Length: 268
Image (cartoon, rainbow, N blue to C red):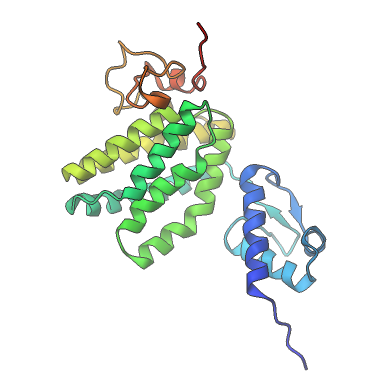
């Protein structure tokens, strides 16, 4: 009897594209995906479509309950909090290890500079470079198993970030400032300080997202950023200081003010 062989590269391509559609919101939470749907969308065999759905289900991109049709995952406030707390546990220890060696990966600096450029252009589309910043820190540890564990969370984290930033609740100005301060702390060898700032950084995103998904935000959502200390005498996030793209190094009076909107170009 002939064995069914699925071409892995084809399945990989379909899986990657479906992941992208979910993150971009083209496949909304709760959308059903059947083998027939996937086979017709990509003009592939049902066996390949089945393999893609199984992969996405294993990665928690899709959920299937009681052998029913697979659906795009629909994250709620409790899911978000669990995902972000798991991130915090793992990334905090990574930062302590990197600080011990005063190791600051160049790829993290590059990712943060990209976020600053996007913010200077008035864009909130920073999910990919933001995730790349954090992933580069984990990968810099040089542990294949630690990276594998973190990458297993990567899609859920990216989906959380996409949902939050799509609502323009989290200011790229604050993201850039806190990322920059994290790298300074690593360079100074202050692992505990970096871990504390990371907890603040992720807790704000966690609670803003939980609230935007129907939960009640904790106090972390409105706590001013410790990376923006001169808050009383500085402009809002909508008005980045001259010569500082995207508000890098700018100050915001409150987290909510920083989330009110991207920079606006003024005309004389």
